[in-house]
Image (cartoon, helix red, strand yellow):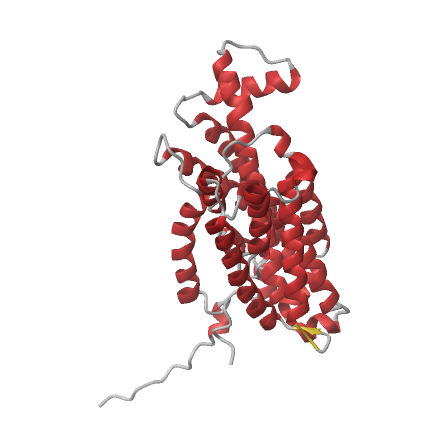
Length: 371
């Protein structure tokens, strides 16, 4: 028998790029990713306006938009086409983009706050609180003295109240535990959802119940230009704050002890993150209902391309969330014409398999590799 020559086992770490090298590559690629997503968002917004029962050419969409904004563009289009583009479809696609962007950013903040990749506004009960308050407005007329802003004010109030309850119950001896945050949030979400169901069950307004049930699944139908001011300001302020806090977010993801050693007051910082999440979620729910899975899917998808540094994750998640929900809305209004499908149905069909994939193939993100 010939002698068997054993080759020394190759260190697998030698075949993998060093973390510093991977980070440099992602830093170099980041501007290209942002530019590509901005271009994709512009194309998405344009195509989304062209699609519908009445087909309108992309060039006509731009002509109408420039004509209404500057008065400089001219061309031949009917008054009906102008009304469809300017009064119906453009506000709708912009609202869908804002909601998608806001929910994606909130998902990033929540996953950092509780150090759990499954966290989003719905798991922590914030969305359920906003939904309950909004249903109180629609069916019982609560907060009507705020006029056209009653739904937004009520949803924000509901989100903040649920956030306060979660924070209060999750604290133990002055410490805010990520595990307790999730457990309390899930429990509160069930309680608030039960309250919402009870109000709907006891309501007498059949048409109101139908609209509430549809709205709870998510919809941006009936969007108007006047609806865009508040979400635009809220998403801008919230995202700006989170981007400025990117380094503390990175420290929080690295672990409690690491964050504290770097000078981060973790309890106070988590409270601030929850306030921002409640603010954005409340406004998004008020305008579009409960749209699930966006805050779960977008951050994970983005991290595959730009890594986990929040200086990259936040702006890219914002753009990706906007693009994603605009196309979800296009499907919602075209797949079962002349009816419309709730946004939550489509995001559920996409988000469910994504959740299963996440558990099976991203065990490192779920803590599967930890002892």
